[in-house]
Amino acid sequence: MNVLLWVVQILIGLAFLGAGILKVTKSRAELQPTMEWVEDFSAGTVRFIGAAEVLAGLGMLVPSLTGIAPVLSAVAAVGLVLLMAGATITHVRRKEVVPNVVVTVALLAMAAFVAWGRFGRFAL
Image (cartoon, rainbow, N blue to C red):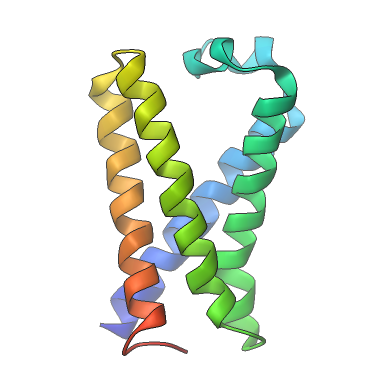
């Protein structure tokens, strides 16, 4: 189980790190062709979401890899659950069920799995 937690933790950590960097470094106009939801938010909000994703991605990886306060990886996973709940609500409101809602629910489930495992029996 610990190996599966590590695999999921690394996958979503890298995914959110990459997605967050895109949102922090690109303008809304550059993001809009592939992320239509950005039209509903200000540039500052999109950058804030990106920064939260970068921090969560780092939080999923760095504490567990270094062994310094590894509980922070579980905390980051909870943050991603909340972030993905908001993303799911946004996509449902915009009627973007497939593939956006499916992806956000899958990421939410993966983050919840990591939070459950790292807060519970498989804490590092």
